[in-house]
Length: 441
Image (tube, rainbow, N blue to C red):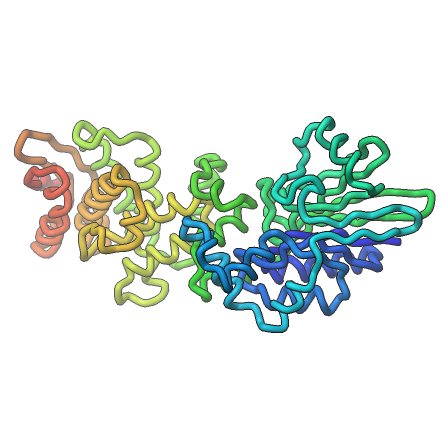
């Protein structure tokens, strides 16, 4: 027998289809599924139907069970908005037939396969919420082995694969098909090669096309955090605070790649960014921001006009949306909101708590975004005609004013007026009037 061991699909149909095709190519002739069909992904009903089509031997997962329960007992929903929405949305997008099918699945299955007593269970045989993972101590597995009454325990729940033999009992965690939690976004599953004399477990990580599942999540209006979970291979709580794991050179190249894909005006974007970084350094005694925020400004500067790729009307808002949604950028959701907000406020409205993307930032970073948007706005104003007329900026800071000296070719009155108007946000955030001094090169 060659059995595909799968689980924790979590409504990710493209990942499931990729795994099923891979298992078929590798000779699997049965599928054992440890549950959690649904949750977070955009295809709950399709995943249930697909596993029924392939005659998977399945059990119900804890997430599946709770999705069914909240349909009639909404009071048990978690308080956290995204987790609450994930349960509600999954339940609402299951057909009556699929709900009936899930409800009929047992919490565990016991059967014999070629002389091995097999236990299929979602989490631990000892406790339905216990995670069994690579870090589980051998002493704990020994305790569970003594009570499992099985030769092979196949589980999931922790989203972390492992296969270990303890006291003649095999423990196999399938890993997660649709929502890995170990930093590797590829789908994970195992093939059990079983004969009367041979027992072998082989794990596979399967590439699949993330674009349609990300697009479906966004088209359905589900939180961007759900997309970031798939992109980073991390759970919801981890994605919220995921540290930057790319070096700055790779991040910079990713930003440039997105800008190029959006056919940005490279000359203007680079000029505005260069001037913005000079202004950032000039104003350091006022804002006291560090290298992280300087990078935010740099990325926002290069991306501030990419919304033009979808038409000029309200292109600043389109730039924000692209930054928040693009799978090309290696930022977590919070960083996308911050960088996208800086880009969005390079024109028109000032930062406001009425804007959802801005309101999601911490009070400290709301001020940071306002400062950096003011800097980018002023730099954009200095290149309003996209002709690179300003070569250098320097200046001085006084108690009541900020003086910006510009080494420049001859500027038109339109350019001077644009610079003055776009400096208004700087005036507001620093409570100092901004004056320009024009020095001919």
